[in-house]
Image (cartoon, rainbow, N blue to C red; front, side, top):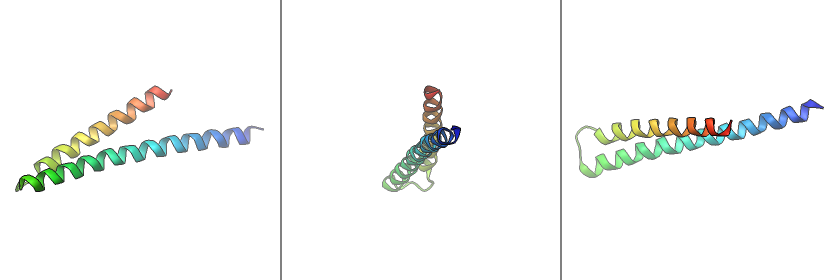
Length: 73
């Protein structure tokens, strides 16, 4: 009797964390792409904006994941 319940719980967790990982990926890729485009537009010799926006987007993705994880418990 517990098998279907356990399977449902597993699939719910899998879907939740897969969606969270996809959202984090989109946030990080948007930051990297935005930094790259800024560097290309401003014609910088060193990819300053790519580095800065990459780090900022990773921090935002981690913040979003922690906030989502703690609010669902």
